[in-house]
Length: 522
Image 1: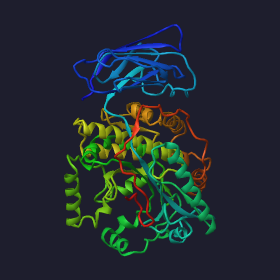
Image 2: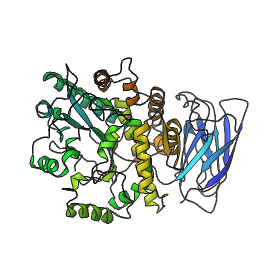
Image 3: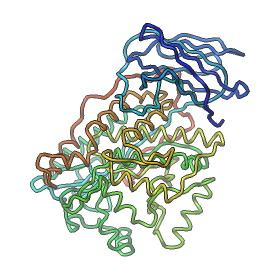
Image 4: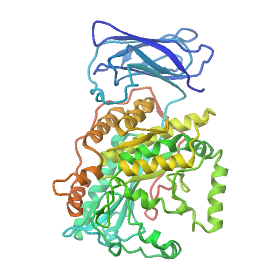
């Protein structure tokens, strides 16, 4: 079902806690709907819903209405443009009517600088809302505690860590953690905090420290030699300076998708939004001790690989596999592990993997990006399953959007993937959250996402914060990154997942970790 605009109108009563909204859709389309009702009020309410026609009886519930025909309604607090009484609704299906009344317990709405198009509204989208597993890989630089420079202690540090959940990297001055796959954001966050804590404790034993950032602010290329092994030696031989200068750390996110054909088709729905995630992660303004003028210099270094950059459009997994096998046969890449595009299908487990982001010093930024990516995947998978066609974006435009995000971070303009025009980072980020609202509500992630996104937009990207220090320097940036990498604030947001609004995908394989792999494997 292709979403279509439908008319809606909101009339506010005298009591600010109460709003009534009506929407009229095309009754000829009986596709299932997921409904999100948003009001300017800061508190959730008991939501009642009525759909005329067969099985149109309704039930009341605290914040949630589960209808007898399988539809689910969820009321959440949203942004509003107080100058307008008209609202926007997306979708089609049948007439709907919702009434939200007084209750308590919701976190405040986002700030007024969110996009003005997000008026009080009803949002409707077709398809079953299923929650998919998400796993995270975080890479860390190893630095000397005294000088702040990179130090080649990867092998020694790895020997101090548990056999599962930690792996070495191509460079001796870096190391990687691998989370378990999770359904709940609290479990994912706890997993990342545990890994960071264990890593820091092991680093202290051998007299080093770890930092999470795209590049190390204070370093020389000789500080991080290539790791031992025939494969790494072959990469160094074939790719020369490109390989020598890959002293970078990233954040990789896996989301479970069991059907590879669907996953391949879903990639086209996801790719246009990845530059926004890059901007949220940007943490690498320095290279070899110099301010590059970029928020993510890591991305600029990474784009030089022949297999890097935005993913192509694929009609099937076979088409995707043919492309990879051709690149290996040509000798352009040594093996499938050298497929470095921003988005790829895992060769080990049924997941879509995102690789565009810098490593994030703030653990909640890592979780935020993982949750947004999961929502993007879930939306893309539903569209692919329904046979919908995405708007096509050329490789040139996607590369331009990625460059813009790497240059600006959250401090300048980004390219809006819906218009391919520039807009402020604040508008583009809030618009993405708005578009993903149904999935974020269904998974119980919305309050966390809004809280962390609001903080990031207020404080700025990691790159900007490194350069805003009182006496900015590579050494001072290292100290800031060391502290942030091991700072774990109280859990942001506290809005529970609505009961009955979504279920875990029962057919998604839950991958596990092994001690000898840097990716999630079956």
